[in-house]
Image (cartoon, rainbow, N blue to C red; front, top):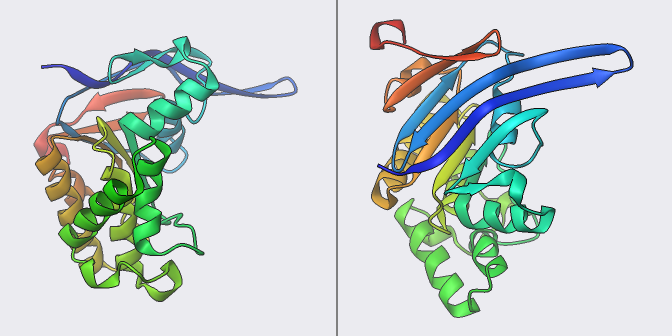
Length: 230
């Protein structure tokens, strides 16, 4: 089975004057096509930092990241940006929707950045919003949507380009339990329908148990947890 995402020998060190903070060192990760992976860890363990490195939003101190077979370090900034838009989707705890655009326009944007004609981009965005139960809200702006509706819009935006992998950083962490469960279920359904891989950072072990593998980031290393440990 081919890989959607791979990290080898990944290290990240932050330096401030003579003080150096080592977040992790020689970290390894392989995510197969269509696989779903949860990453648990205490606050400050470096989970969000790891996602930023995997997504090409930050540069590792050492090591390499491959996305859809492309080695990030081989690419220019512009090429990394195009790869991110084409091969990765991002869902954060806060939706990061553009407030002046409608739900439909927000979901269309990644497709338009790929050079897709407007009618096709509109149809793809509309289909995805309908699949997450927002067909009646496509012309509403984020300020007119509930928290759950905004997150479902963000999920649709992350998946609209049919990426190789979606990176989620506590995507339901800002929602009440019932809404979080609903949004997460729809996110998993869409991922599996598209055979898109998912790497999810979460503190919620009940959500983590629903994924194919659960890893724990501790002392700069990733360790796979047995079902009894989750």
